[in-house]
Length: 167
Image 1 (cartoon, rainbow, N blue to C red):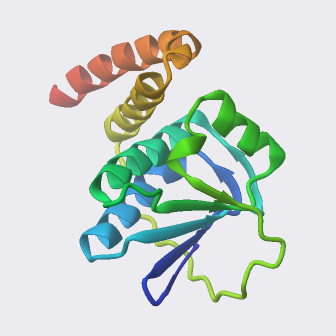
Image 2: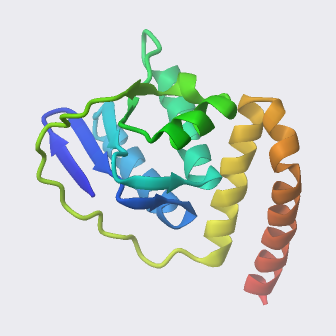
């Protein structure tokens, strides 16, 4: 769900923040960044889990946008992450890319559903998953051991899918 309040973009995640949402979320954030929005609040109170693909996508955006801000400040603010999500942010070494805020009285916002883009192909999903995991690996050397097998599998799967798509 999404709402724009002045110069602040609010995105609310209900349920799972996973690879199925990552491409549409990434596209939305990039389009709004291109339009001049520089502050993104992601409300996670009702987010029950965040997978590594979604987290890698957010980390890549956080890294890119922090570099573009002068002085470098995290333009992505995570509101009310669960203790489990906060723990994952710390353990993967990416918490510094975000401003993390616990705000029990999140202001009332009229969110609109995010309209999913045209069907994302399996190749695009696999490529996005692979890119997200590579970002996590590049940000913290300890993540290389955690994700080396999954990235190897995804890279092989991506090659297979691309070959099939060309036929």
